[in-house]
Image (cartoon, rainbow, N blue to C red):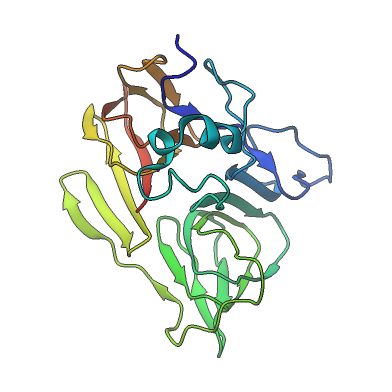
Length: 265
């Protein structure tokens, strides 16, 4: 396996806050039960590669090593700029959590207890939480997460300096747009696109010429490529980064697998 050829990178999750079970016992890095409380960073600049010739190295290092092959032409010449997409897994456990975010973000609900809810915006609006729904939150809008929620947070990193101005648009549920027999488009703007795929068959896909992440939600499968790591495991709890120069790839599974495709434009 060549250390210079890009391949799909499985990333080690990083506890951003103490991850604990109901008794307060901390959980190790890796799989985290839904009943836990805390935040895991699944993809950020300090994320490290879990397997292959670059195992143990950070994305920051690989941005200098691979440049546009990793980031795409638009960002390949800016290795000092923040990673344009950050992925976090949040579990509220039995406690509510209040947040204030400077950038817009998407909140995909992975699991929700009965009567779980969240509140967002000014004036505050309450949303009844339901697994499989995605909430768009404008910059500067406060967010209150109720107990019993497990959420995927997708968005750009917070920029240094003053917080972003409040967006006049209110928080809103995103209505998935059909994009294919097994695919739905959740969100797209000039910076980011998010799609959801649920399939029980092999999906042959073409990687865009930009940074792309696969976030497995349910089931297990394999990412098939022709690179130095031709088979990469796809399972919940780990994000997989697809370098911009990867080209074609396939997702294969013996059963139903569900995952988000997140592309940075």
